Length: 190
View 1: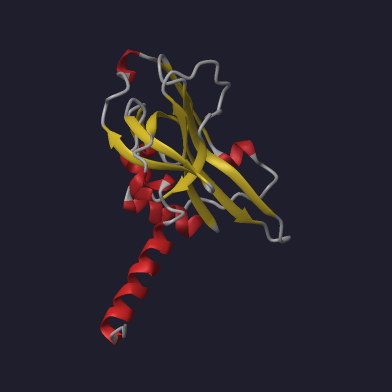
View 2: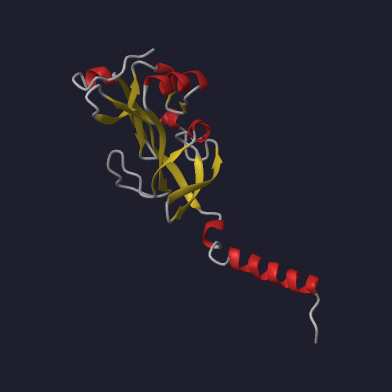
């Protein structure tokens, strides 16, 4: 039996498609219920002596049931308006990019029903996210997450589906990087 060129190319491409999806079935799962347990803006700068420093500009942590704890940046109070409104505007992002050598937006996720987390702990892990994703995910939201080889991935976000932080104990203070690191040449706000 003779095989036409069109049939040969079609069957070859079909096999390539099957091979390309062979190891990808796990990441396509819908994930498991999760909640936001950690949210931070991390910054990096270099001194005139060439030393590099990385620090949290702000961070907040929640047990997902009854409390939110952490601090807001004194220099950028609009980042933390309330426990359910922790966002970085485009204007603030530009100011941070001008001030620091690096800016990272981090979130930590935990499984629904997790208890006994220590401060800043997230049992599914933490990951860097885009500013848009950072702004989208808030404390009190219900998430679907899946663990991957590179950490944890957010599959979906349902606003307010994991309790109401308005009923939780919220303790958010303020700190200035220059006060935390007085001898590390923290760049001045511009």
